[in-house]
Length: 136
Image (cartoon, rainbow, N blue to C red):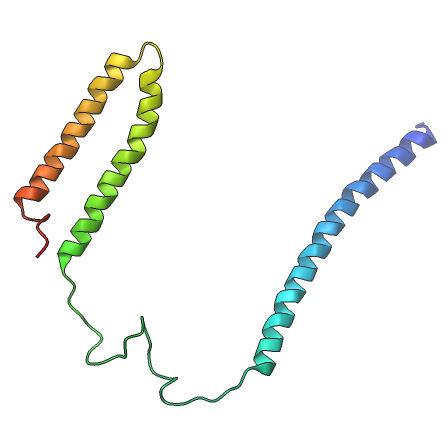
């Protein structure tokens, strides 16, 4: 049979354990109630005056005129793609610099970086030859 002090200590430990979760649960309930009260108060206090202007489709401050379809120029996507390519390049350069400084990795990482930069240079040359980089 177990001693009463051990059983009491285990019960106290379990009670403390669940008490910490009750504090977390209470805070979650208070947070949900706070959001619900805020939304309810906003719904009760706001003025509701629908007008035809308020019911129009609105996007980016431009009134809708004409059809919903619009032509977009592909060159803007190409600029975004080139930005992503060179952002990834810069992200790759920082870890490479730390590995390059480590003993025993210098020559190998230097060759790998020149191969990587060569691929980027070929891509940039291709974009330049296609006229993508000319802003008109």
